[in-house]
Length: 464
Ligand code: BG6
Image (cartoon, rainbow, N blue to C red; front, side, top):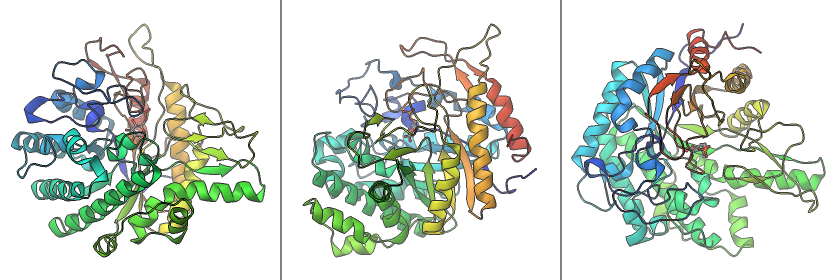
């Protein structure tokens, strides 16, 4: 039976705004996530203290992290992906000095992980930024945001230099094309040109963070984070194949800049053809040369594209619109399940960049129901994860360098797209519903024991 490498990192991934709650505690400022209580596609709703959006408490990880980390350790996690809420460190985003209470919180969190031999993988910005920067400066539309972000990044690198050696810059950086408020703090009505200008600022900021990380923590590694949705041509018509190439480049462009250090020619043509003018200075070009050490990505689904108008029925996934693949089944949320696509994507990224890869999100959102004994028998989740991990192992056998796998939401959390708690990903059940009712008690699902076994056997227990 094939096993995973000894140093393969096993674990789970969460994001501050989807687990922590405590949205105004210890000096935290409002973030873009706080003003989108209905999720990344929901409207902006200006908040005041005491509002009852589900994320305000989320799963109360802010206070319950020791209990949760103990459960992760029981499963044998060697890695936990978390994010730092920028607004805990710089509440409005433009302060000169950081908020000590916010810094102290993450000190405790990283210490708790260290006590359980769990390596933190830390995202600097996961689907949120200070709302103050959006209101006063126009989010990533402003060049000044680069300076504020660099200050934030340098602050946390300096503070946690002994505790965190694996970093990621922006979560799913390519997502801004589909949800500009969440990605770059711009209104949904923004023009393509405005969005690409903001994206450019974020790419420069990402590169400056890479440079700062290398300076401040020389033995750390820092990666980017892409939404890795592979697009297939719906037919073998050459036009469909070209269309798929172009659709994939829409997200690969981010990886190209972050891994190769410059804008690719196809993107400059895209800008020309669409009348988009992005202000790129010489200093920006220089900054972009700081490239990432590894590539991380999320993987949930694939889709198809075609140039045939009649076949082009658009189906909406979380973020991407794509034509359904007739060969694949879907989750309850319409996300098409494609384990083999993960092997393909790993090979595509490896062939393209020759940099280590890290799968930092993958999982099945489902409606779980505890049985009479209070246990969730989530065989569907086990089957989904098993089939994806088998393909990861195949990719490793293909020669792809894979650093690790952190499944999305190892503990139930608030979903990003619609801010639901009924869409569960966890090995650990959390007693809380969409209306906020529940005790917040944690309990082990069937998949908890399954994942523990997978980790303990380095994947030998997987069923091919
Ligand atoms: C990714 C995000 O897009 O997908 C996560 O990085 C998100 O934040 C995950 O939670 C799953 O999406 P959803 O909408 O089911 O939570």
